[in-house]
Every structure is written in structure tokens, then in C-alpha cells.
Image 1 (cartoon, rainbow, N blue to C red):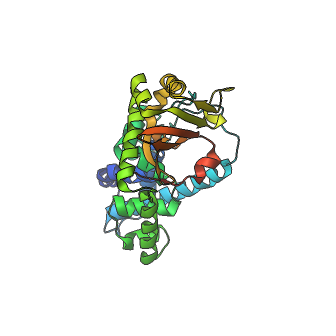
Image 2 (image 1 turned 135 degrees about the vertical axis):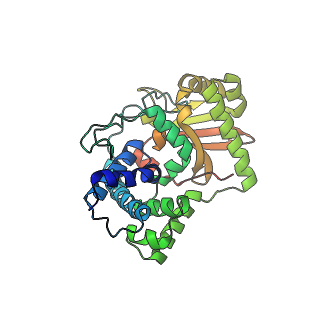
Image 3 (image 1 turned 90 degrees about the vertical axis):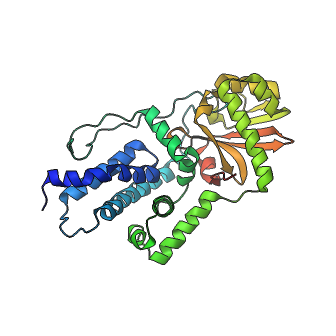
Length: 321
């Protein structure tokens, strides 16, 4: 067998690609680093004398590790649906001001050259945000709605061009079934708009103008994009204790958005049940969904959804216009 130093030399050129694959599958830098570390550990224990294609071998291993992590995450999520909601959520114009969630850092090795038992520094939230932006925060949100096998198939084939012959054993399907799995995932990611492309583009412009004004603290911009009789509804979990769940009138809605609009920096337009909406997704993890009704070029109503059970029922897709 090869020495550890020699294996490390061979592994290192593949690290960036493995991390990229794992990040798109898991949507978390710390989880991706854990998956890459586990891949290194498995390589260090394996007999690689008959491995002709190390890149393919490593991609297979990291994908299987990610698939196991996604399945465990899905099981935990099912347990959380219907559980007690957090007291506060971070939103856009809702009154919530909670932080982006628990710290993601954890102890663990960092692969060859560092040592498997040496602690790794915690995840830098700003760097994680940059990673989410580089991938596409909306895409990470939508990928999180796929089944584990669908997500792995879509990431490997559509984002990294892994052929179905190589993908099939990873997701425990035949090549034909793996192709169908990726196709089904692709359809979910793209979604089906409820309006034609021209109207969808107009609605997106309105929603983007609302987000831009919220980010800039632009009262005039907010009043320009909100209908005079706009209605804002929100789940109680998205509001401070005692705040009204319904707010009416452009001035009242705009003033609240001015106060609490800082959460909009983590918000992205996406398709919600076929219409342009907004996802608030720190690190690519959905915390709030905002359904928007656009009429005559202005926002006539919007609803802030924070209840996990309701979020779970939404049909989310990436905007393509």
C-alpha cells in the first residue's frame, strides 16, 4: 500500500472539486468539509493499488458520504415538522430580528497535512454567505426540497457532468432509472410557472424592486412598489410577541419594512407555487418564504410563512426569466 504522505499528495489536487461537489449536495460549508474529510479517511484506509481513476473513485465516495448525510438530515427534518417553532425568525418587513441560526462550526480533522484528530476552526458565516451566493442561494433552497437521491443525481449529472453509468451505483439505481431520477429532479428545480414568461418577468421586476428598496432603507422606493391598500399577513412565528399578524396600507407596511428590512440581504426571488416569491435563506437554508401577489405593477399583498409544516408544503423552483 502507498504511504500516507504519498496518498496525501495524490488526494490534494482533488480537494477543491470534492468540496465543490459536497457543498452543492449539502449546502453547508462545514458539512461539505466533513464529507471531504470522511472521503480522505476512507482513502487512507483503502487499498488503492487497483484504482485506475482516482478522481472517479473519490467522486463516488464523497457522493455516497453526502447521500448518507442527506438521508440522516431528511429523517431529522421529518421529526421537526410540526414541532414547536422557534420564538423568533429573521425576516423581511415582518418584525422578526433573530440571528441566522446556530453556529455551524464543529471540531474535526481537515484532511491530509493537518491530521485527522486536529480541531478545525468554526465556519466563517461571511465566507459561507459568499459560497451560497457563488452557487446561487435560490438554487440551494430548491435543492433542499429534493429527495436525497434526486439531489445527488442532479448535482452529479447536471452540475458536474458525471455520466449515468458512474452515477447509477451511487444512488443504487440502474443507469436508466438514474437518468429518470435526474430528469425528475431537473423538472422540480425548474418548476412550472403559473403565468406566461412576459408576466413572470414583470412580476420579478416588482419583487426585485421591493427587495432593493428594503435593503437600501428606501421609503420612497417601497411606497412606489406597494399598492396603497397592500395587505401583509404573517405567521405568528415570524413576528415579535403581540405583533399583529395582519398589517394594512402602504405606509404601515413600508415603515415596518424600513425597521426590519435588514433580513432582506439574505432574501432571494424564486418561484413559489408557480408565482414569483421571496425566500429568506441564510447559508442557503430556508427560514421564511414570502408569497407575493402583484397587481397592476405593484405588490397588492404578501404573506410571510415561517411555520415549518407550511414551508414543507410549498412548491419551490428556480426562476429562469
